[in-house]
Length: 185
Image (cartoon, rainbow, N blue to C red; front, side):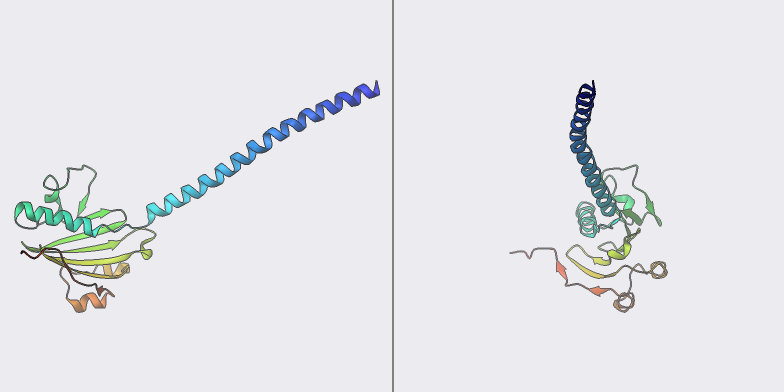
């Protein structure tokens, strides 16, 4: 009777041990999966919080509007239907001259029918990791200034068409000029 009891106890322990060998890889797989998912979710959140500058695309669209209509728009809302598809979620501010997109705030100002300026200001928690841009654009040439993210006090005092000295005071440095039109042959 004693050997029978030991044999049954041994079979039960062996059965439990087999279950442990099955559950251990399952538990390890779940643990690795949760760890990989947490890394992925953290990276997605960081990428969503990081400002992504789209000044060149906005300039491209504004130049397309100029080519169609013969002048730059007085505000960004005029771009809807002409160059941009109508979007109910697109919210404009500051008399339809301001637009927030991918953690950047863009402030557009038409200076003349054939010239505009554009501020690109980083927003959000990761704003210090991004640059501030100021662009002065005509149909053929654009001048770009770039600098660190402006402090909140400086943002409220920006001018639509600042002088080179004003831009230097804000810490922006002029980048090499870019001609966008091809000389005719």
